[in-house]
Image (cartoon, rainbow, N blue to C red; front, top):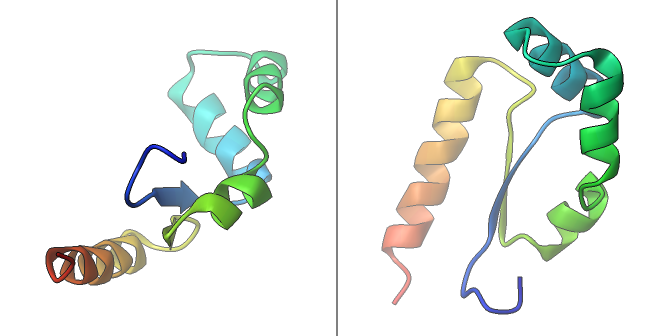
Length: 77
C-alpha cells in the first residue's frame, strides 16, 4: 500500500460479503470464510485507504459514491 499514491477500498460488512459470494454459487460458506480470513482485515484496509466506497447499500448509492470519488480524483495533480 505504501507504493501507491492513492488507495480506494470498496467495503461492505462481512455477512454481506459471504451472502454475495454464496449467491454466485462458486464456493461453500467454509471456503468463503477461509478466503476472508486470509485477507487483510476490512478495518485495516479502510485505515490505509484514501477513499472508501460502501457497497452495502443500493446500486444507486454505490454509483453516487463512485462518481464522487472520481470527481475528487480527476482534480488531483
